[in-house]
Image (cartoon, rainbow, N blue to C red):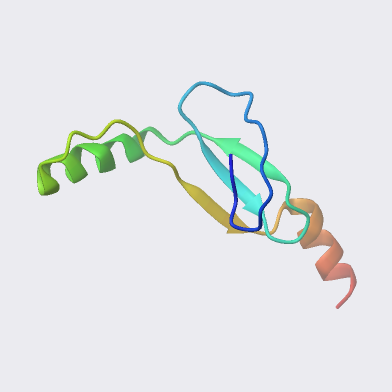
Length: 73
């Protein structure tokens, strides 16, 4: 996986999944949400493209960084 900050990481999981990325420490958590497969079907229907795959990343603070942030308030 390549990121805009010039970092890259190897993803061991080969099954379809998405990433939640901590903006503070960089930790990545994998998750799967089957409803997002509907997005591929909608994209194909709306654009006429043959959709082969998609990539989703969400950004926020991991539980550990949330605790650290609360402690510094």
